[in-house]
Length: 296
Image (cartoon, rainbow, N blue to C red):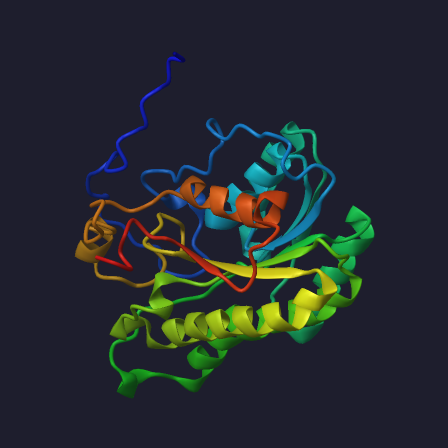
């Protein structure tokens, strides 16, 4: 009989967050308390992505950083796209990727611009020597105080960041992706359980589910799989920079069946699985990583 380690209690670590707010987006990791866990000390690779080349938008922090670290430790080279204001966070991600012995390409860009999307894919392909995995993960959200206060410029920023850039990146990447490649979209629990204060954000995330399902049907015959990950409440710089009331940040994630927010590293496994050969018969699907919120 083999001794096994007991699983960690999924309710831990529970507790509240200190009240905090970041006045503008993008939010920055260094201003968060506590610092999110991206798997810096915990993720152990098993060579599941050896030789792959991945482009991750929003790869400087939060879920993007966790995925970049995990991918590097699984054997993949990565390129990350981030806003110029996030350079310090991006350099931290780069350091962890390089410590894993993998290449990391830094691409500062504002993906609300079409040419920036075109250039990001071209740069990643050129410097990595190809592209096997595309992860459109960059996102923008702000708390809205009633539909009567919505501004067209804010709607456009949300849609261009979350939805239009995803479509443009896929448009540019797909013609150069081989059979066996993967596109993994970051949607959200907001797609199926929308909050009124995140109306425009929720709309984009619901649209991304449809995008995933439709593109999976188009690209299946080419051997390219398309899936999505739907995070629930995850402790990333987006949260204190969203404009939530202080008490909402303090209790963030406590409404889930597991009673706590998730950490970015807890998303990484879904992205590794979907990109790996273990998911060779999985396409058009959305994996919820939300502490049970979608069924609670």
